[in-house]
Length: 370
Image (cartoon, helix red, strand yellow):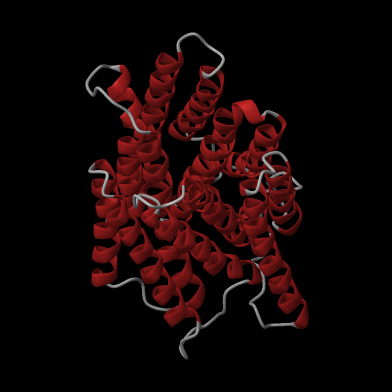
């Protein structure tokens, strides 16, 4: 249920630009667009994946009706509060999502009935949560009259990049091997090697945080470059993305491409600091967005016993991937054109069309019984 919800929330965050370009609204907010996309759209995809993958790995119960209701309600509050510019309320709802996720995971991984433990890479999930909680706190207090403007800037770095860089590497440590045809990673604690891998992932999470400190203190080139190196090592070496997918399936290639667009976007932002915002959309659209849709496609098709589709090249999946890449390119060139807002509107329209085609393909399959 969270995958279709993610698309609907994404339409609100992306459609913000389309409504402005069409003259339906008279103002726009980059803060609204950015926070809705990471705190609602991407969070809904993350919840959908973790609420499915954790019970599957541990052999435990799925989320309860109360947990599902709280998660859906908190996501909607994030969007509604952001629209009303009640940022403190939005950040409290966002923090509530992390509290819900942590208790859900801890109860299932550490419970006596758990059949398996998490892989070592999953230690980055709570580290991503810490990025989100600290970032949300900074954003929430940044609107006080006496607050320093640096609080909002640092909070946005943690929320817009830190959370999902940690999530991408942590979840990628499980998903990338599975999608390439390799066996699932061993449990944390199963050997001393897995313990050392967990330590390495913790250090990667700390390194990601420190790159934000470096960037905030003036290292606008050095910070993203160091972050790109950590992400490339985490996804490329530890996650196995250094080799192409070992199994057929178009969505697998999208996830693989997304894994490399993340460090590429960070390098682009470091080498072209005057175009930092459009450069970072390589990370946001081509990295986070394409990976979210690719992983959601994999989870939906394989858990619904539609392996034939998962091994093929369904046209709706191809339309989705092409639309996202075109939207990313449109956003990049917008700053170099004389029609900036028209480019934003066209990119938003392409993203919405591609995601609508994907939703029409996946949605009915998710709703069917048996």
